[in-house]
Image 1 (cartoon, rainbow, N blue to C red):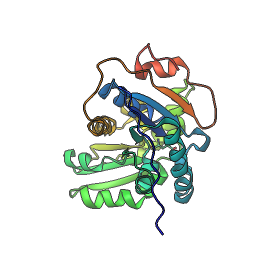
Image 2 (image 1 turned 90 degrees about the horizontal axis):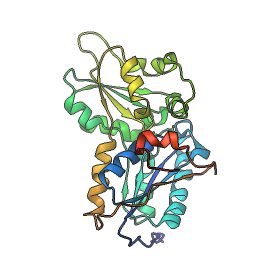
Image 3 (image 1 turned 45 degrees about the horizontal axis):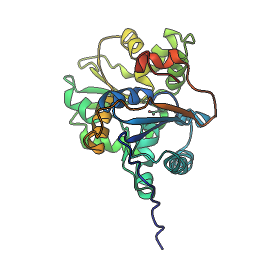
Image 4 (image 1 turned 90 degrees about the vertical axis):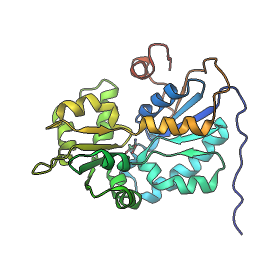
Length: 272
Ligand code: DGL
């Protein structure tokens, strides 16, 4: 007999609760856009840092970890909407999540369609974790939306950890970043002109990616589109009063984020 889907109470406050989830700090690049798009929402950010980086885990390990964990987080936060701000997880677990829980979900998947639509040279690279670029889901996006482009899949094993280190203010050498992005750049008659940031950690390094690229390209960050979709699913804002500040939770139990890490994302008024 089919298992009944679990139901949870939705929050009824004027400030709709949104749960934003990632393996680590990359989802802050999505949270930043959601906060801009829906200043009335009460956002809870959860990082599964005890299991970071997801890119180093097998598909079964990620499904077995994320699906029950999201159930616990839904029970804890009673969100109106859950945003999975992680490509490595979203390219695997969205069907499982939607089959298990009734709350609406927004996933983050490689922005292959807009990238291929806007590429002039028809040479596009998808820069993600090793897991994301291997996924059948990603292959299907290319087959469905590649629009005749030559699409290269580039799995960057260390870039999420480098991005977290840089965010914490630790020194991260140019060489290490340049080596991770080098396979994105194909020269010749038709040069790569578009790179999809298919991991939410990578926009954390955007200034350095731009500086280290061998030639200028269009870097595609899906975060604004995810925020727009989230706002649409929430419906019109019910309150003009400011929402409470986002909260931050880490599965490792580590203490809150330092103010100087959060300030560049959310201004000087957000405390951890
Ligand atoms: N931020 C995650 C993503 O978008 C991945 C980082 C990790 O490997 O945990 O894919």
